[in-house]
Image (cartoon, rainbow over the protein chains, first blue to last red):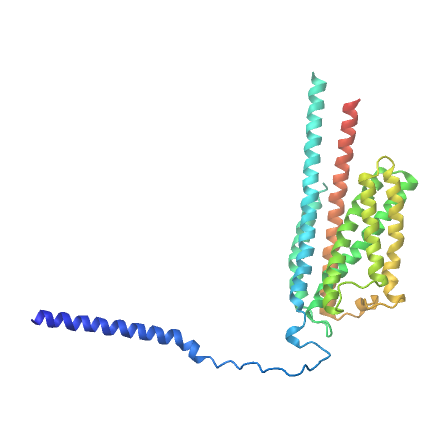
Length: 108
Length: 218
């Protein structure tokens, strides 16, 4: 009997701790949502108001243009260097091959 | 390759790696802001573009009047570098202009004459590659036109109405902007000398190869 009572108490304790854990998890997950302010809905426009200049957030950002410019310079210089090195190694290999052929030819 | 080549190539690599730090530390320009920093690579490459067109023109003139193959090799190497540095100028310029002027391109005298100089250098290379026998002399004539275009490109901003900044901008730069600019100029100048030497070496090797082929045929 005491065994059954102890078993029932343990089961209830486990159930309480499980419910508590789920509750805390839900609270933790919902806390950031609850902390957020309700977003104001944009109002319906009944007229367009012209401005001569774009708002700051809509203006063309400078950083991507700057990065593209510098990246292009580095890549162009690197590609040219690689191209010259490849052409040079090909010509030098060919010169060495011809020179060795000529030496062999003169010996025979 | 000469002994000085590799140490100078190492120095050039270190200088290029250091240049972004100097450029980042330079002040912003008041009206253009961040995008004006393109200037520190745009202007040195523009000067090297003009310098290589002059080198190509002088070497071509000496080749035409004296017939020196060494000058021809130098002219060919310089023409290729004119195309390379011209491409850098013509890409970085519009990227800067898009933000500063609101357009990628403006058909004003400076931009149009720079494009013409670049196309003349391309024409030189195409004539050399596909022109057949005698194309070296024809290309040398083209290089003289390319060189004649250089002073026109340089002074154009002072004599014609254009939105491109005038040449008077450089002497009036404050110290930190001037330091970043002149350091970049030194980087590009050193790189130009190294690339020119490397490219001339390639032409020397090609001449050697041609001589070997001829001697094998005989």
